[in-house]
Image 1 (cartoon, rainbow, N blue to C red):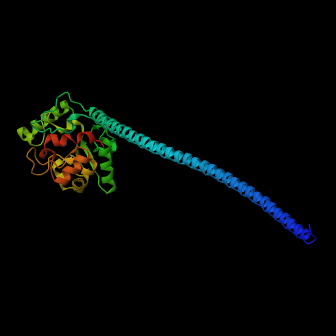
Image 2 (cartoon, rainbow, N blue to C red):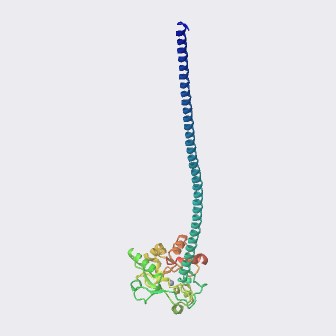
Image 3 (cartoon, protein in one colour):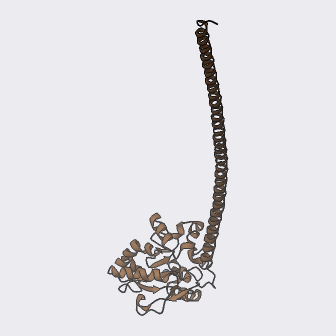
Length: 312
Ligand SMILES: [Zn+2]
C-alpha cells in the first residue's frame, strides 16, 4: 500500500464511520420519536376514553334526573287529580249537609208554626156574626184582668186576652200621649154574660136589639179580643162615640196595634158600631186597613193565614 492510498482509506473509513454514526443517530432518534408518538397516542386514547366515561356518567345522571322529573310530574298530576276528587267529594258532602240543614230548618220552622198555632185559639180570626156560632163552652186560652186605669170609672172589672192585652193598653197609652182619653166599657164577655146582656137589651128594645147586640155564641166579645171603647164624656152613650176625636184617632191609628172596626158604616152585618173594636193582629189589621176592607169582606181561608202571626 502506497502512502497516497493510506490517507484515502483513512478518509473513507472516517467517512464511513461518520455515516454509520449518523445513521445510528438517526435511527435512535427515529426510535425515540416513534416511542413518543406511541406514548402520545396512548395518552390521547386514555384521555378520550376517560372523557367518554365522564360523558356517559353525565348522560346517565341526566337520564336519572329526567326520569325523576317525569315521575314527579306524573305523581303531581295524580295528586292534583286526587285533590280535585277530594274537593268534589267535599263539595258534594257540603251540599248534602246544606240540604239537610235546610230540611232541618224547614222542619223546625214547621214545628215552630205548629207549636205557635197549638198555643193560639183557632177561633180568634173566625168571623162570628149571625152565621158563625162560637161554641158556648169556648173560653180564650188566656184571659188577663185589665188594669183599672184603662176602664171607664164605675164599670166592673174587665178581662182581655192575655196575649193581646198589651196591644190594647199600648194603644190607649199612645192615644193618651196624643192628648186623648180612651176608656174601656166592655171587653171579654162569656157566653152567659152575653145571654144576660142580650136579655136586658131585648127587654128594653125588643127585637130592635138584634141590630146592635149579638145573641150569645155569636158575639165577638166571647173571643176575649174585642173591646167596646168610649171616652169619659160620652161614657156609655155608645153611638155618640163617632163624634169624638178619640174615634177619629182610632180610625187612623188602631190598625198599628192590631185593632179593626168590626162593623163600620154601611156594613151588612150589624148597625154601624164605632165603639166596637176587635184585635186581629198587626199584620191582618194593617192589610185590611190598606185594602179598606172589613174582616167580613175577606174569605175565611185568606184570613186564617194570619193566625200564626196574630200576636207578633
Ligand atoms: Zn162590642
